[in-house]
Length: 355
Ligand code: HEM
Ligand code: FES
Image (cartoon, rainbow, N blue to C red):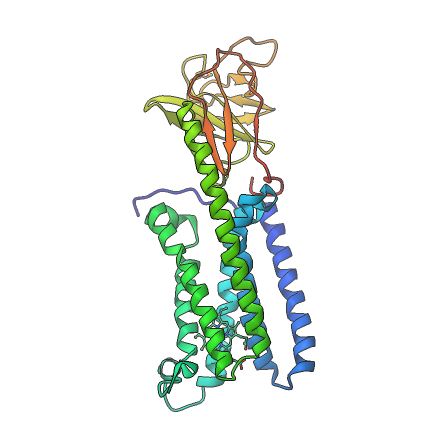
C-alpha cells in the first residue's frame, strides 16, 4: 500500500458519544419489547428482528437528517463529525434484522437461504405482490459497502470523489428500504401503522434536503462574492477538524508556494506565516506548547493570535485573517505585517467533538 494516512484518533469525546449511542439503543429495545409484546403475540425472535429493523431505519433517518440540519445550525456539527459511528451501528442493526429474518423465514427449507430470498414472491401477479425481501437484501449490500469503506483509509485510497459517490448510495438504500416496507405492508407481512410513520419520515427527509439545498444555493452566492474579494478557500471545516489535532498545525500552501501554518486550539483556528523568524523552520509542522506555537527546529515560540514571541522575546511573524462562511474556511492571502494581532476564528459547534 503506497498511500500513507493518519487515522482519526478515538478520543474521549468520541468514546462518550458511543456510550450515549449504546444507551439510547438499549432504551429503544427495552421500550420496543415492552410495547410490542403487549400489541403482538409473537415469538421473542420475531420481536428481536422487528426491533433491529425499526431501530436501523430510525437511525438511518436520523443520519440522513444530520447533514441538512448542520447547514441550519452549528449545534448539529458535533453529530456531523461523528456520523460514521452512527452509520456503522445502523449497518450492524440492519444486518442483525436481515440475519434473523433469513433464519426465521428461509433457514429451515430445502433450498439455500439466499436463493430462497431471491425467489420469494417470484410468482407475483401484480404490483401488490412485488417481492419485498430482495429489496431489503439490495439495501443491505449497499449499506455493507458503505460501512466497510467508512474508515479514513478508504477515503484516502479511493479518493474523496469516488468515496463520496459510493456513500451517496445511502439515498438508493433508503429508497429501497421504503419500498421494502411498503411492499411488505401490501403483502400483510408488516404492520401498516409502521408504513405511515415511514412515509412521514421520508417526506421529512425530502423537505429537509430541499430547504438545505435552497440555503446552500444562497450561501454559494456569498462564496462567489468572497472569491471576488480575493479570499482563498482552505477547505471544508469538518474535514480540516478531522485532519488537525488540537494544538497541532496543518501546513497550507496558497499562491502555489506561500506557506501558512494553520492552528486549531480551544475550538478556534489561527493562521500565521509557515516560516519561522529564526532560520526559516517549518512552523506548519510545529505544535502549541504552553499556549505558544513552537518551531520544531530550535523551539522559538510565537503567540499565534498575536504573531509575536511571548515576553521577554521580540520575534515577530506575519499573521493571516481567517473566516468561516457556511461550512468552509477561507484565508485572506494578504499577510498582515509581522506582529499584527488577529482574533482566532471560532469554529461554531465544535465543543465536545474530536480533538
Ligand atoms: C436480507 C435482507 C432482508 C430480509 C430477508 C428482510 C426480511 C424482512 C421480513 C421478512 C420482514 C417482515 C417480517 C415481520 O415483521 O414478520 C421485514 C420487515 C422489515 N425490514 Fe427487512 N429484510 C432485509 C433487510 C432489511 C434491511 C437492510 C433493513 C434496514 C433497516 C430492513 C428493515 C425492515 C423494517 C424496518 C421492517 C419492518 C419492521 C418489521 O416488521 O420487522 N430490512 N424484513
Ligand atoms: S528555525 Fe525556528 S527555531 Fe530555529
